[in-house]
Length: 111
Image 1 (spheres, rainbow, N blue to C red):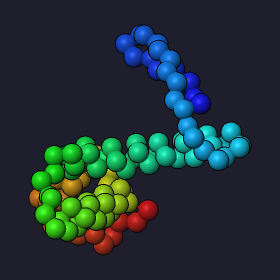
Image 2: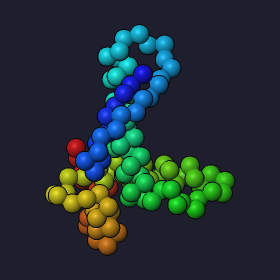
Image 3: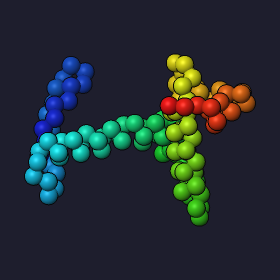
Image 4: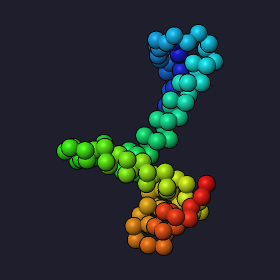
């Protein structure tokens, strides 16, 4: 059971979340929950914001899986590209307009 306190618009509220698990170590469990939300915030949020994934029209045959693989690969390449202080979305747009930027992202970016 977890009881986080959320503050929005100067109002605090507490709610209760229940978990079913076989883990007995509370610290290990807390670490796993944090890792889950880290993935949710870093990957899924980016996919939704950059690709507007929730309105995707890819539904036939293998196209949803193919788009998913392509989008995650592109997101990984853009994330690894160290191209100054520019957002991922703007960097992708710049790569669409400028072939030098695209080649940099594809072949020369290193993390």
